[in-house]
Image 1: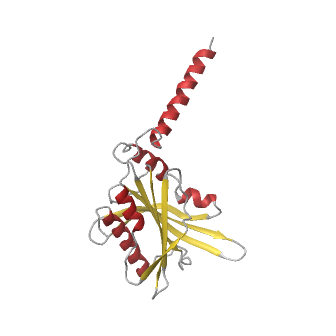
Image 2: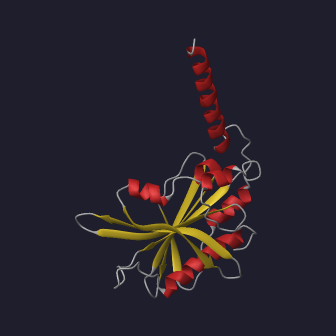
Amino acid sequence: MLKTPMLLVTAVLVAGAALVHGAVTQRWGVFAPNPALTERLHALEVRHTDWQPTDVPTEMPTNERSTATSRRYVSAAGGQSCVTTLISGIPGSVSTHTPDVCYVGSGYRALRGPKKETFEVPGGGTAEFYTADFEKRTQTKVDRVRIRWAWSTTGTWVAPDNPRWQFAKQLNAVPVLFKLYLSTPLADPAGDGGPPEDDAPTRAFLAAAWGQFSAAFGGGK
């Protein structure tokens, strides 16, 4: 006697979960991106003093219906470097797969974070983003990296507490979500055991990168 009601409840729960997933990934929606904006952001090369870009393979994971572009920048004078990775696509795909999950899954150890930080960007405004430090040791080397990431739909970079559901609320108005990663080599630990600080040239490049990617939403370069 109880089997039929239980089956009905199960069917409703499964159907509801499928509808939510389909809505979040826009599986049944009309995908209407702004191709000019997407192309402009993926083509953007950060211009800052003597930092020179080189296209590199993307190491960050991508999901269905998303595109990624990565460039490595190196300062000719000081040797500092930064890898920028821009991912664009439907919100259900781009809002997930953050480094605190993916890097640990690929053999890195989380040293600290993620925590939220805010940068003032050139020209006014701020960028809010997550920061986390990772380390991977092999028999021949130690790879230590600091990764910052944030999302945007309008040019303001934000770090929501729950990005998947935050951007799911905007599905009808926001067909494309952008996620920006800025990755830099991590210096040796500070003498007091605290996290190492980014040097001034690196911080200046990071501010320029956040600011120029923000400006590109409005057509600026």
